[in-house]
Image (cartoon, rainbow, N blue to C red; front, side, top):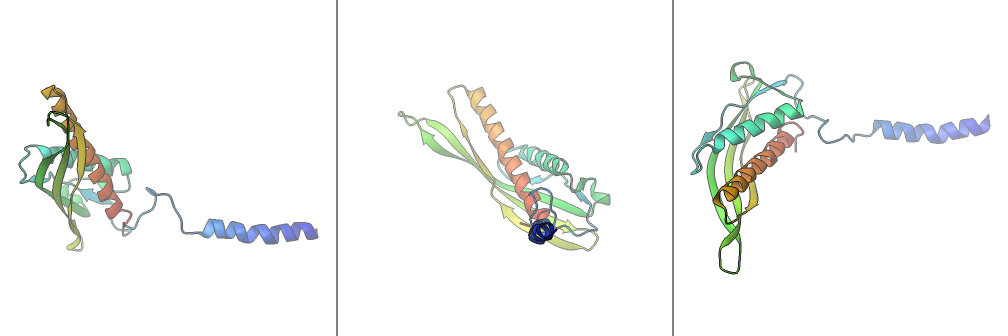
Length: 172
């Protein structure tokens, strides 16, 4: 009997410590106020030199929020929070060359301004510039290089969406 009590006296505090710790898995916690359940993401504005890039970024950010699932993506009129974005710049920087000085890789770099507004409280939650980037390889085939560039933009948008979710929902 004494062994059982001794065993429980040693195990019970450890169990309490493990169960009571504040750790959680990324993607499951939330620093959102309890009353915030919905978010609207209207099409980003685009003042950059790259036409159509706003559609890609808007769509990917919406998809990332839908995948995350902690905020429901809905229309602007009913949303608790609204994400407004503006793609301010888009640059291609050559970063790698072959022996004949032909570009073999580019670095895509953008500046995206984001403002998130709490509509119910008429309060700005976030106002920040982001600089998503991605690199891609160039080949001698123009169509293949263009596909690589578009994939690079898509990947940069996914990283941006995940960063935005991390800031908005998880608070860091």
